[in-house]
Amino acid sequence: MKNRSETLREEIEEMIAVGQLQPGQHLDETELAAQFNVSRTPIREALIQLSSMGVVEMRPRRGALVTRIGPQLLVEMFEVMAEFEAMCGRLAARRMTPAEQATLLAAHQACKEARDAADPDGYFYKNEIFHGLIYAGSHNSFLAEQASKLHRRLRLYRRLQLRVRDRVGTSYGEHEDVVQAILDGDGERTAELLRHHILIQGQRFADLIASLPKLEN
Image (cartoon, rainbow, N blue to C red; front, side, top):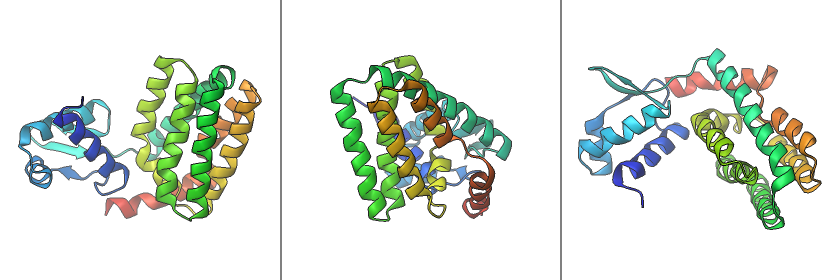
């Protein structure tokens, strides 16, 4: 059972992920308390939790702000995320049960429906479920936990990627290949496909960086 501060942490994290709270923005405890109709105590507890995740930066006597990730660190984080995904995918191809594969196929179909509806935000949420199933399918709880933590830290930036022209369609096509490799039990191909799927480089990274000032104004 989640306590109030954990629920608030999830809600504030979601506001950051969708850009309602922007990188570098000051987080006023009083304003947030009024917005959620709670006292400042659970808000502060939620911000401390977000700080431990790296999503929020707590500054002595100056309060909290949404963490701003610089371009170099962003590249490095996506590089690590790509390797986490590759490891999860390699293990999932070997360890997923038939029932888990069926659930993955259903999640893939949900992504297709969001793609066909030209709904990048809907695709974003279905995409999170899709990747979470691969983490769980690795049957390595420590790896799945670490992958999930970094996935959460990169949520805002992964969401922005999906708003780049044609990225949703490309992402779905890459998912199609990943699903087939998992069903074939081909761990190495799954790992390579997921590594490529997550890595941002060249034009994709330039497009992502170009979108950041719009959030920080």
